[in-house]
Amino acid sequence: MTKAFLDTALAADIAAGLARVETLFESQLASEFPAVNDLCAHVERYRGKMLRPTLVLVSGLAFSRDGERLPHAHDIIAATVEMIHMATLVHDDVLDEAEIRRRGETVNFLRGNETAVMLGDYLISNAFHLCSRAGDPALNLRLGEVTNTLCEGELVQLSRRHDLALDENTYFEIVRRKTAVLVGASCELGAKLSGASADEVARMRAFGEQLGVAFQIQDDLLDLLGDEATVGKSILRDLEKGKLTLPMIMHIASTKGAERAAALDAIERRDPTALRAALARSGSIQGARARAVSIVEEAKRGLPATRRTHSRELLLELADRVVARDA
Ligand code: FPP
Ligand code: MG
View 1 (cartoon, rainbow, N blue to C red):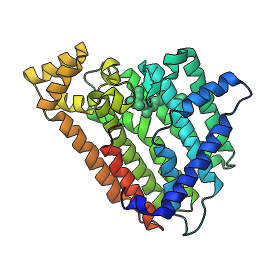
View 2: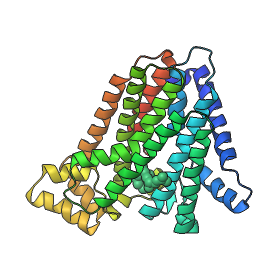
View 3: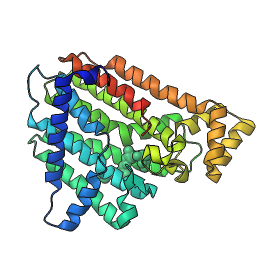
């Protein structure tokens, strides 16, 4: 346990908030059809770190007054961002042909692609229905824009599969869109709903986006280096699906001759052992890890001052955890 987590009042506020978010999440998805409810119950078991709803709540608490309860809109937005995230994961597992997610079988593996696609649609449609219940069209507009961006990121990634010329800038463009914008919006909207100033809101968004980028670099490293039992989801999907990730891009850019060819050949043959060895030799795995850590450090430096210090400490702690995790 860290210092931030030892603040019992804050821990209790967040636990109570996440419990409300879970109730809202479940009640929003409840259907008169058992076939739909069974699938939603399966997705609810996917719930893992709850990073995005936690960021909405902690960012909200950070800018609220001591003793003040968060308004209901925070719970709605926290449940909405988690539902958007779940929809994207259900669809992503179809694209990746993944069998395991959060230590359980994926919907596509259990029920096939048609059901998984439709369930993802049900989740995304419910996310925007739920968001509308906050009664502020600006929230729908913002999260609509974020979801559009997320889909663009995924489409650009698909268009560059098996492209060994993919450069670092394009990798970061893709990652910012497919992962970081939703994390950024979680921090941004949490702070905004608590009355943070325009400058504070912008800085919270930047903080979240940087966390999101670092999160995805770590995710990519786990996909390449982790083991399935610890990570809890299908690994080596990036290599299998021809997605170049940061250590591969760094290696290709920084080596030539036989070393460069060794990695290109391993990527083409989809040979993880040879690829890991080549990337380790060139320092590209360490390089990608260092890049994620430096993005987190930059995010922490840019975090604005907040009304409540314990919440700010927790945001800093969450930032460190993004790159320290092995699952
Ligand atoms: C995980 O990436 C996936 C994403 C961050 C976004 C996926 C988005 C879509 C498939 C678009 C779906 C859109 C809607 C509106 C439902 P990853 O495969 O690198 O990570 P993983 O290891 O968790 O699978
Ligand atoms: Mg995936």
